[in-house]
Image (cartoon, rainbow, N blue to C red; front, side, top):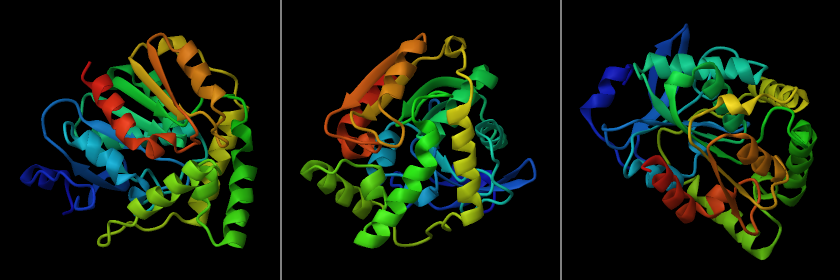
Length: 288
């Protein structure tokens, strides 16, 4: 389907079966998927570095979509969406707002993972009336410790993956313990469950633009997070190499109304490793 109106025709409950739709707003054609009940405040999922629609853990999406409308999307220039990928987190946030408003939504909850959590922070600051609640996972504040190192870590683990014939996310998202390795393999297997209507992979141009944006975020001056008055759930693994876990603690400390959840023996992808617990905590937070 080629427009937002078609969404109302059917309610999909499985991310594996959710059709990829398109919406044109602000001169950009956004690719997105939409599932779950049509009542209540929708939850917008904002993705991580190099990710497209198929990189969301279906257990997390389906878990939240069991009780809430969930919308995932490719931001400008990513995957099947048109346009050029911005080189700042702030411009990515404005692209996300264009998409949300293009859907005709006046208030949303946002789950931002990693880079998506950075984008979500900007949206909450620039468009406070648009956001009801925030879930920030595997992410950190502007100027956060170690965030400027994401570029070389990503390059390093891409090379490690090539040499070991493994997906780089096995190193980037999960610990190297037995439990972490097992969780990584299970996560990567879940990402392959959808076999039809899969998204386009991210282009190298878009990937490098995203790296530049994250690097700038890591070098930026700290922001005044006290202006974010919405309730926030912050979650991460206890051993995040990409966005060091202390950034999650820092976020929770500086936000006026935040809960913090840290998963044991888990890395950047802690919310995927502990997806059952995370979904339970996310639903409790959204419905509180």
